[in-house]
Amino acid sequence: MCDNISYIRFKQQDNGEFKLSHYNNHVGLAFSNLQCKYPSHDILWEADEQNWSEVIDMINSGTSLISDVKYR
Image 1 (cartoon, rainbow, N blue to C red):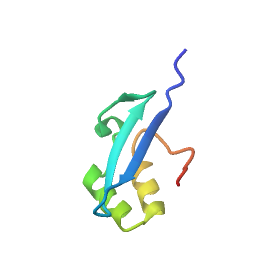
Image 2: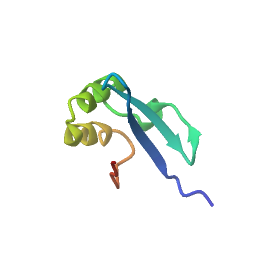
Image 3: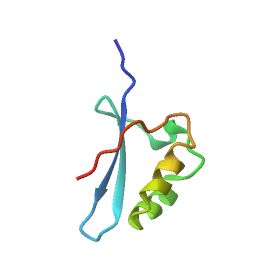
């Protein structure tokens, strides 16, 4: 049975900028699979500015919606 859960992870690098990865059940997929209206570099710029509500809105412009946000 497939649960179709995807994860988008933002990892902050040593220089303070974020790197993006997208996983579906621990198998890497292209970010373009989400079909967002924004390129990933635009989303990363918002993440670098800590504009998380804007990041969520940008990602939700695609075919998948964010259902849960966790951070540490």
